[in-house]
Image (cartoon, rainbow, N blue to C red; front, side):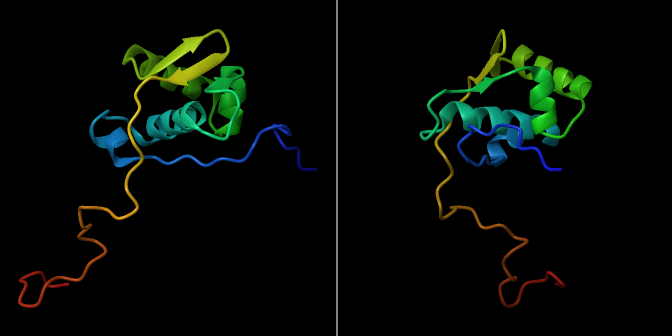
Amino acid sequence: MFHRLDLMAKPFYFVIQSWMLEEMHLKLAEAAVYAYIDGLTTSEVLERKGWFGSKRRLATVLHTSPSTMNDILKRLEKEGFIHVYNDHIISTVHREPASKTPDVRNSDTFSPQEGSEVPF
């Protein structure tokens, strides 16, 4: 039997931005938790901003153990990336979303220029 965790939640998506990894130096799991909380905090469609609920429930939603979630939230709060007050968590670092057309070309997605010494 499938149980939806929050029947009243409006759908939204969250994105792990490269600056979360490169500038904030977050590990992937930390970046996923931060991106989720940041998505809830900055969403324009949700009435309430941030995460409202227990850390255990957040761990369930993001499919991780409560102890791992607790460790991640402690580090994010220690670094000043989130603010935790009772069962309310908000992100504190905000950036404009990345543009739809990136300025930097990812070398993995473009073929090398003619005459390039790259063998692939």
